[in-house]
Length: 202
Image 1: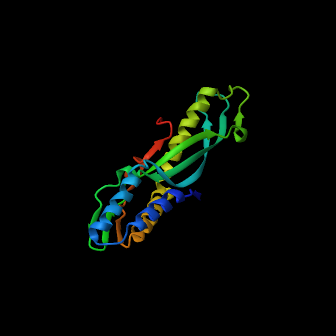
Image 2 (image 1 turned 60 degrees about the vertical axis):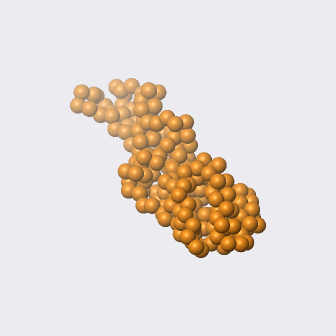
Image 3 (image 1 turned 45 degrees about the horizontal axis):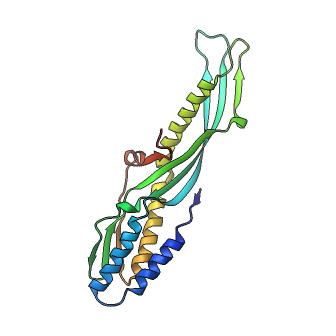
């Protein structure tokens, strides 16, 4: 698993812009804070973490009414990215030296998933037909479902939240303020709802 690079140029520009305006009283500071929030709201998807997910499907097609069996081992790989939609960053509250905010819910995007055809292994009995392309398509769908089920337990949401909190804390401290960032907790069912496909099709 590899962490994606943060948008360093964007962050640095925002911090410098905010830092130039950080003198004066609370109203002077509140304005650059809101300027930073407005700039972040223009970033609908900030990718923070990426991962490669590998799964191996084992198929054994043998029924009482068949003579011989068919077995198949199918490796499936998916490229996954997780991030936060900063356009949903709302309800910023400034109280004295503290800036309060709540991190928006992350998203987990499956960019691609495919069978590694060159690594597929099959064993087909003499009286059985080979696996068809339609069957391989069904196997690919099963592979995607298997990957979806594995994602909530990979810690992508927690890593994404930690990256986002670090980034926002840096920007707020650059304004001379103390960040108070609430990081929501999500259960498995909630994380499953965060999973999307790049082509929007499951």
